[in-house]
Length: 547
Image (cartoon, rainbow, N blue to C red):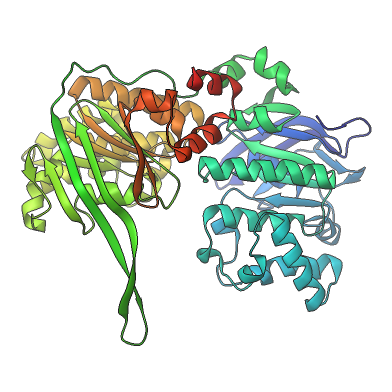
């Protein structure tokens, strides 16, 4: 643990933040106080909407003022210098120089029109007054520092040409350019694969030790807090309800919310099924190759082998988990099984060949094989009420007759997923992430499918909401003997649901078999690396997996 003795570097006292819009006021943060010392890691933990990110943005005074306002007693001091209400010139001298921030989603935080070199150089020119030659040398040094060994070749790259992990490393390089006293990391690993998460966390710890930075870590991932933080503040509804040393708070939580948060990770075992359940969906030798074209005449010079000769079996009432890092071919496999992308190889549903069917021939089978996408906000039309969203499939497949006859089916689908009847009249933006995912599940369930393809359905959700969705899926599977193809890189969620497991890398199967067997004794080095990265964040979990 870092040496945190001495005067706090950052002092936050009685911080309150209120957002004012026409006819409405929202108290996002309510009178919170904490200290951050040199070299210390302090974690702000809580679910979405708890006020974590608003607190971080308040430190840098980046909230949308005057829509956002601070309470009259609010104070944020950096080495004794008051930041609340400070002059723009004083704040410019601090932002990116003494306090830097790594945002949650690097793709939206980086400018898509500027090269990596230009974006990192900007902060060096502003604060260090470096000329282009000096700045270029410093950029290359920073890229090496954050683990991009081929930094020179990345200088002219644009954000879209990099992977998620590489983009996050670029964000960290930008933040470290001026060797700040404080680094604020706002959910820095949420959108990353487990192995990349582990790399980024290790990188942050190494860089913190090297530069003696204080780290303010904002996350809802409790395993990350266990591994990274010295102290933790637990937030809910804009308030800090518990604070203290990580070991104390995690092993002897006092507040009911903290206890609920610690118990919220997906748990339980897959639904027990009487053997042998019949096979409902299977594929043999499935291939999805995307051509690489080059030259004036756009000739095919090679292929991206997204899915390369995969055999998979999904049984009635069971879950086949498909895991692997981004780019491994998981989602492409799901889309191919749904016949939503061109493929080669056998695909059978209930014994019937699908791979030779036309679009028209597939249409009657669509109601029996449904999909739930990763981002419920992006997959639900913002222009349609929930009732219209759920009704759409009924109308397409001619189920329920007229609107009056379809209404009870819509309400029944909402009830199935735990939503009230009045949700039917509201729009997607009026719901939380977990509620939107329930709507997406209701849209699929209303057609009474036999197979659900679930593409990362919990990755964007808080731990407690993940646990609720996992419980819901398990209950629905038991009730209707649904078959799931569950695509995810979150191995804790997969372990709670999957009967069988496929581990994918670069379009190929690295390991497959009963999920319990693979979790207990993985054979392939890649599977071992995935499990180590996923469960290393929690020593208790690691021991559970190994035994």
